Length: 219
Figure (tube, rainbow, N blue to C red):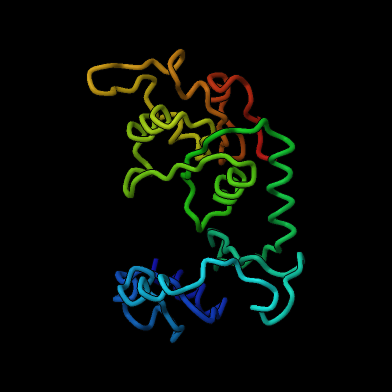
C-alpha cells in the first residue's frame, strides 16, 4: 500500500531509493523527496555497463566494514500498528546462514519463492549460494502458480522449497510435460524436496511427503 511505503521511507530516511520506472511514475509524495534511481531506465543500464565488476573494498568505503555493521533493515508487517524497522547486522545474517547449513543436509538447487522484502529470502538466496547450490527464479507472475512451480521443480530438479504451507499443498501430485505425466512419488517430485514451512507449525500431511525432514516448528 502507498501509505505503508510512505511511512517506511519517512522512517528509514534512505539516501537513495532503488525502484523501477513504473514506481518512479507514482506520485512524488510517496518518495518523501528521496533521490530515486530507476534500475530499468536506459540511462541506468548504460551506467551499469561502465561500472567496475570488482567487489567494493575497504578503500572504497567511508570506513572499514565490520561484522557488527548494519547489513539491512527489514520492516514488520504492521498488523499490530505501524510497521517497525529491525536492523540486521552482517554477523547476524551470517550466523543465520551458518546455522541452516549446519542443521540441514545440503541441497543442490532451490527455488526462490519468498519476496526479497521478506527475510525468508535470505535462506533461499544466500543459504544456497553459500554452499554452491543453484538458485532458480520463477518467471514473473508464476511465483504463486502451483502448477507452474511443480513443473519448475521437476524441470530443474529442485531440492529446496520455502513458502507458506498453502502454496506447497496446492502443487499437484503429477505434472503434465508435453504428452507425458510424471508422478511425484517416483519421478523427480515434490517428495524429494526439503520444505521450509513459513508458519508457526507445519501440517503433518505436508511433512510426510518430504520424508519427515521438515521441523514441526520454525527454529
